Length: 410
Image (cartoon, rainbow, N blue to C red; front, side):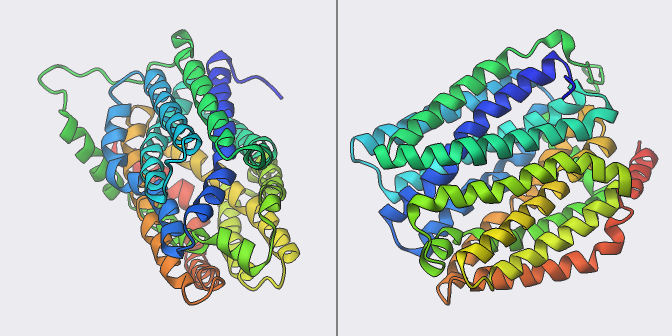
């Protein structure tokens, strides 16, 4: 695998460490939650509170990203997650943990996640050439899937069985390492993408936030892509917010095997990330995106019809493959059409819509699950499939349309 340079390697290393921490948390947090409450709404609130900061803070954080040294902002976000995770481990060890403390910690970690995500994605255009965007995003996706699904998640199940607080200790250490690596990214390898402005003309912080909103609104193809992605994202969050209860109670999977199920599912994402650049080159980025988002939506619907855990895992494996292709190529599309010095603001604005609406989908899924644990998957999957089908023709040409609009608005 060809090196993409020292700066990318440090950022990638930070991503590996934080993904290990996330992988441990992905399995441990829901297992901890179900020991604290059996209420589907409270369980779904965990998913909602992870995503809520995207609605509340993505736009101002995006503006901050375009104003400060992105390396240190990424390091600070990971350092904050280290502190929060360590405090969770301490509260578990001292037997003071409650579902409400877990919910608060989830919300705070979500704020840090917003900062780390926007900053990382904004650094890619500052580190790589346009021809390397797909490779860079593919490597991030692969490392995320491998480390989270094949190291962090299985490790979490083992540690959880030894002592409930241990996964959260490892979680905090991973974030500490990520913070150190992010802070050590060599500045000499970063492209200077700032646009110099005189003191009289330099916009204030609020004006920066408004600019991101106006830019997205004026680029109609980009706006439609964001709205389409946000609509499908709400359906996905609705479908998966109570998935832990569906797998354990409806499909009768033993809690000890939950991490293994996630690991098998994650292998589909690895293959998807590996093949995404090749499929894009052979068939065209927009065509692959359109097909993959339709298939992943349909597969969610089919997962709701799963007669047993084996069928569910097989469908989830394929769904991971398709949605990973979509994620890799979607991000490369954004990085190609959005100017690098504006990326933080535009990325923050679009994520406000896409991920900011997901908490409402998660909570809705929790209420729907009261009528049956299959219902969130069936309803969410059906609506997402219809949206993807109606957007199919638009998605076939979205990259070219958004790029043309961006040039006209410069």
